[in-house]
Image 1 (cartoon, helix red, strand yellow):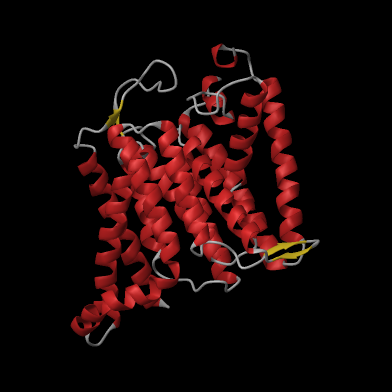
Image 2 (tube, rainbow, N blue to C red; image 1 turned 180 degrees about the horizontal axis):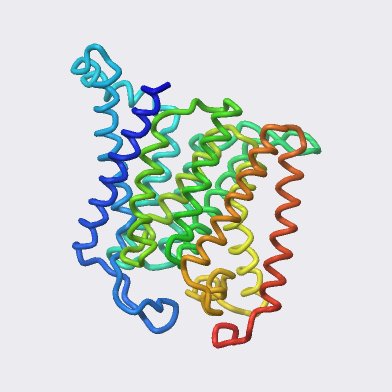
Length: 357
């Protein structure tokens, strides 16, 4: 047990430090998000390659952590290190659709971060990536519902592609307040790993530690407004959560419950904008979290609120997954109705200001 703790801490500390250094590096690259007097209200240009920093920090930390683990646990560390690449490739083979999809989302986001992509072309390319991912295996084998199981291939592919499109874009839409989206994604990913490990749909591994530690290193800078995740960060991590959720084999309702803090705010905001004849593709400040900030909430207060919502959904998703049967379905819809009610109450009670005109 003591050795396990030492190895886990090694992964976390090494990756955390690597992520901090990677953030410091990308902040010097000169790719910034400049204020525009409308949606981008920060006082100065802010570096926005946080997604690249998390990737670099995670890869470096995972590599160094794996070396440390090997030297501590193996009687022949050099031989073990030489075998490691093939072993990792074999272990990760089943997860390749997830990594390909998350990688595609990351590159599309990085393209937008560096060169400002055409919005419609970016959406088309991402939709194609979602359809391809679902078609090539990133989908559940069965859709469980209280009224019976569905195993129709076309339905599963279409539903999975829709889930990938909706959630990943939702993660991007929610990335407009320091620490909010990335912090919530860290909670969702951690909960996903715990639930999948406890229910034995996947084996718990050390690889969760560098992922979460890389996010934590980024948040140390992001919470102070020093660096943004950018589209590469929000799309990449959003795609990773959405893809892993499908690959774990967990109930669809359990995965969707974890995602509710994003789904409710984004989907109801889109409905509200459609009702008022507003373009979905235009940047705006109509999300509930944006209106909280406009009403005087600080970024950290808003982030803590949404982190709390994510923790609540995670705990109830865990309870539903352990109970099984129709419980995950009931948990999802109960929280959906409660969250939708809160969103509507907030919208009705919010002050009228320039954002609602």
